[in-house]
Every structure is written in C-alpha cells, then in structure tokens.
Amino acid sequence: MDQASDSSQRRTFMKMAPEVRRQQLIDATFRCLCRDGVSQTSVRTIAQEAGLSLGMVRHLFNSKDELLAETYRHLSTQLQGHTHQVLSKADPAPMAQLQALITAGFQPSILNRDYVRMRFLFWELSHTNESVRRVHNEIYQRFERQLHGLVTKVAKQNGADVDCDTLTLAIAALLKGVWLEWSLSDETIDPSKLVQHILPALQRKLR
Image (cartoon, rainbow, N blue to C red):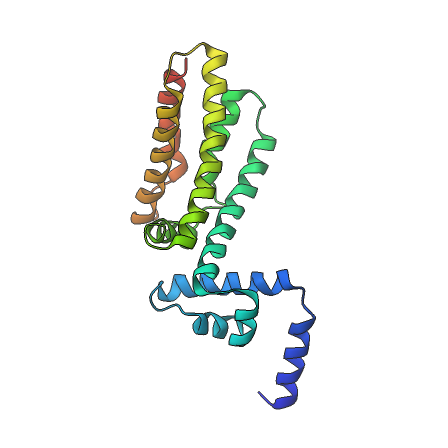
C-alpha cells in the first residue's frame, strides 16, 4: 500500500463515529478468538485484524480484558435483541411467552457454531477474568430475572405448587446443556427438537 492510500484510509477512519470504531474492534476480537483462541489473541493481533493502529485501539479500550468483556456483552446483546423479537411475535399468554423465551436461542437466525463456541469460551473466562465475570453476572442475572418472572406468572395462573427458584435454575441448566450437546455433535442434531422434548415436562410441572 502506498503512502497516499494509507493516509486516505486513516482520514476515512478518523471520520467514523467512535461507536462504529468500537464495533469494528469488537468484531475483530470475535474473529481472533474464533481463529486463535484467548492465549494467542492480543491487543496487537486485534489491531491487525481490524486494520487499525495500536494507539487507536488503546484510545477506545483500556485493555484486552475490556475488549473481551465488551465482545461478550455484544454477543449477549445479539441474543437479547433476537429474543425480544421472538417474544413480541408470540402469544402474550404467560405459558406461550415462557416457551418462546426457552426456544429463542435455538433458532437458525441466532444459532451458529462460532457463536455458541464463544459463549462457552466466555463462560470459562468468567472464572478467572474479573472484567468478563462482571459482564457474565450482568447477563445471567438479567436472563434469570426474565425467566423467573415468566415461570412465576405461569405457576400463579395455574395455581401450581412449585419451587420457582429451583425450576428457573433447572431450565437455565437444561438450555446450556442443549447448546453443549449441539456444539459437540455433528450436523444431524436439531437443538430445537431437543428443546421441544423438554417443554411437555415443563408444562406438566407448572399445571
């Protein structure tokens, strides 16, 4: 690349809004993690992947840990937005909303192997990386509140005598298990069908 072309690219980049530049770096972090894993992903490799200088990366993010945490948050935001759309189209009855919430993460528009693999990677990182752990806690507390609220509504509507706290945790664990089974399997397993086998048992529990 000649000097004039390089200068033109830098000027174009500088005109971009900070949030656009941040998203470029988050996307680059995701690609680096998918390709190289955590140990081989550095601020330098992320900068190279995004086509940016180290100085620009450090201007927008304080550290690799912050980039990792914001990438995790972005992955969660993708699922959250998809789930919101699914719930908005579902029947407003509490049981229908609960079923929609449970099945939202297993639809083709959100489910792909890199996405699921990276969610597991961040779950592992949450044990050792404080920045990632904070985002993890934020994500799952929000999801569990939403899930618990719907479980409670269904139980109250049906007059079901059920431990809503424990049932909420059990559903969350089952959903993670389906993701894990699918991520380790060949292409013949349909995770949405696995979830469909869970729903009748849940309905019986909440009667």
